[in-house]
Amino acid sequence: MSKLPKNLTQHDIKLLRVFQTVVDCGGFTAAETELNIGRSTISIYIANLEQRLKLNLCQRGRQGFSLTREGQAVYNAIQTLEQAHQQFSQLVASLTDECSGELVILTADQLDQSRLTLLSKVCAALQQQAPRLTLALDVMPLQQIELALLKDQAHLALMPGYRQIDGLQYQHAFSTPIFLCCGSAHPLYSVTDEDINDETLAGYPAIHPGIDINPEGRKQLQKLKASARAYQFDTRLALLLSGGYIGFLPAEIARPYIENNQLRFIRPSQYQYPFNQSIVTKTSPRDSAKVQLALNIIQPLLACLDGIKSD
Image (tube, rainbow, N blue to C red):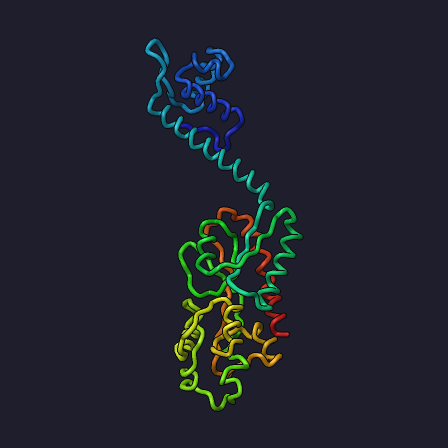
């Protein structure tokens, strides 16, 4: 059986569309009005298509119009071709409008200097490369961030890598140290590090982040007596400044309070763990072009951020 040319010509497509219309209308006579051509011309077109395909596509005569088995198969293939054409048109339309609309970036808590630096540079690059985009930044609890990404309500998140779930993809961004702290009103504030050990710490109320964190962090938290819960760093900071609790804070957030003698680190060489950050996106996002644009901007910035941290 011979086939149509591998690359369909405009004439081939025209013949296929005439055949499709005839089938949709249920015969040659009904198709005349739809195609705005005479029945004899339609007959010539169908005969031409059958000759090119070396197939008998339909029966026409006194008993009416009907498709042959081969004709039905060709008609089904035309439907598939039509769907592919529509999908292509939709794709082109989406690409034309890919750099407009809203791009939503979420974070999970108060921004330390590392994350603030990264996000500010990302926003500057997005504004320059895609000025028609409207940027929307927001802070949400971790579980709400995951749900927003899965529902295509957000495009990207910068969040702790505390777990990985199906449907999302994770790229390690950077780690910052997180240290055990207490406020100036806490009994341990004036105790030297040499006089503080695991048993000492176990006697004081401590703040738990309220989520499952990395293994190093879990080991540290197991040494403490969890008596309060605060994932957000600003709320955790309030508990620490109250003088009633000990708890972990990233060095960059704690530093101004350390310098003002409002907080202190407790044996920082021993009681610390890495605070790992990840760039999180949906595995197959609806607005894939926007997500990819953001990721392409972020990649080179991560290396620059490492340089800023080391200064």
